Amino acid sequence: MIINTIIPAMVKRNPRIVALAGFLQLLEYTGYQLHYDKCVVCGTDIQDDAFFSYEQGGVICNECHNDKHIILAENVRRLILHLKVLQWDKLQSFNIQGKDLLAAEAIMLNYIEFILDKRLKSLDFINQIIK
Image (tube, rainbow, N blue to C red; front, side):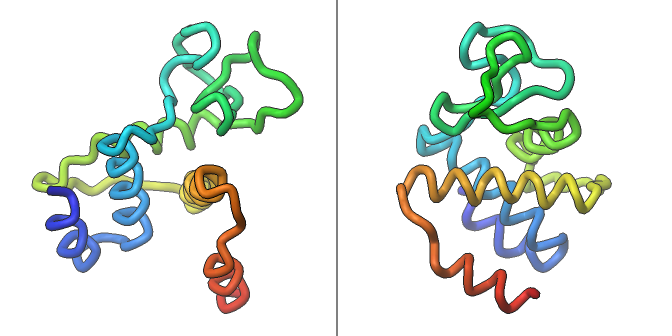
């Protein structure tokens, strides 16, 4: 199971990346996954920068987006797709830009709040400590 491999991986790898990958994979197992490869409105394959909607469950193409959707950079989308299929027993090194990691984390944290329909006070506390 994922949980049995996440803790040892956190010791060997960047814990933030491991936590994000674990969370993405946990969403897949629980049925709360978001979709990043095809437009959730029309089904078009996404190749470049696109848009994103929590309400609609994933990525939105340029043709289907509206002003409510947030921009999703191609680098962030590809990072998320990579982390979703990360094999814990065969961890390989790869490079991630800090801004892409922050953007992917923001998507996941906002998604948690979207699912729960409330602001997480613990995240506010962590942000205060970091600053």
